Image (cartoon, rainbow over all chains, first blue to last red; front, side, top):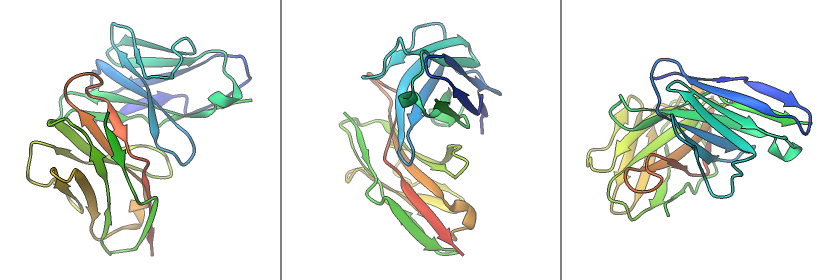
Length: 117
Length: 117
């Protein structure tokens, strides 16, 4: 299957700083990528849809000024958590849509664990 | 709005036995996809199986098969000959193919499966 990478795998930062998470599709081009947040022992919650060459679409309740998304190329999307606070600590997962397959399938990155002190 | 319900928070099965995980969904859409994803302790989301709603035939992938009942809006996953490596969280997911939010995955809350030796 298609491969999606995320960097970093884990990050610890101080409250008030900004953190950037990268999501890359390694062997396919992705016009659309997705960012999810997962709390411990919970399901994945879609935060936003990242579209190459246009603005991201945010889900209701997600602050677009706090979670900045940039889909710089067909293989890279970044999520920047600005002015991070302890409540932003979570597991962030990205996925990329591979249109080549038999179904419109999303492949997931390995996730990034963010801890804000 | 679409919803996905997994009514079994936790299940266990003996190695080599068969287990079935339940999933129901609610939608007014006629064209959609359904997925089962596996999330092992590494937290990497792995696609297990997909089903196109227009197909009557149940999807199978080696030891994994689904029982897709469109009228009942039910999509259960059967794991045969369970292996220790099947221990993971299993998420059922729905994807609509038209209209707003098309291509977005909506996840159930997950079922934690433990395979016991």
